[in-house]
Image (spheres, helix red, strand yellow):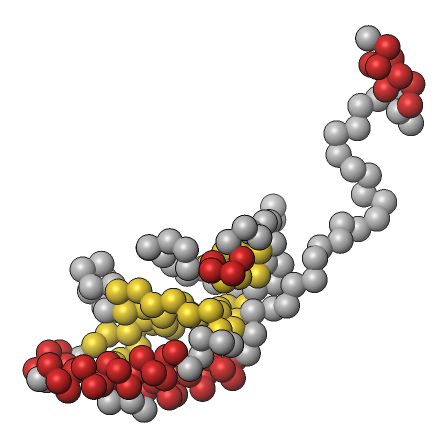
Length: 171
């Protein structure tokens, strides 16, 4: 009981403060902006007509190009077979550079397998106050500002664009 009395006496105005004063702006951790790309691809039906050895060679060539970007990007690939009638694959790419995303896309399209691919949708965004981090190295560092990417088997993409008329709406 004495502890409670002591606490009451030390408060500035004798009341209970549940939130911090807004005298100083809240300081967010420094987050580098990241570019996030969701690329949806359809495989041309002619792909199924190729012999298995050609498919193996083409996939290996494609995989080698894809893997070259492991160091500079967070890369995740998802099969959409059976889930989406418009696309067969989705690549989720997170990078600090738009040039890297564009360079990777161009090189993938120049492969033999790339000639069988068609982009059905492509979404690009920029993070502002959150950063995606690698699951392998940082699985215990997730917090309000850092999100571990790629740890789940499935990934749901909900595209949303905010135009100037959206910002003009009253709260």
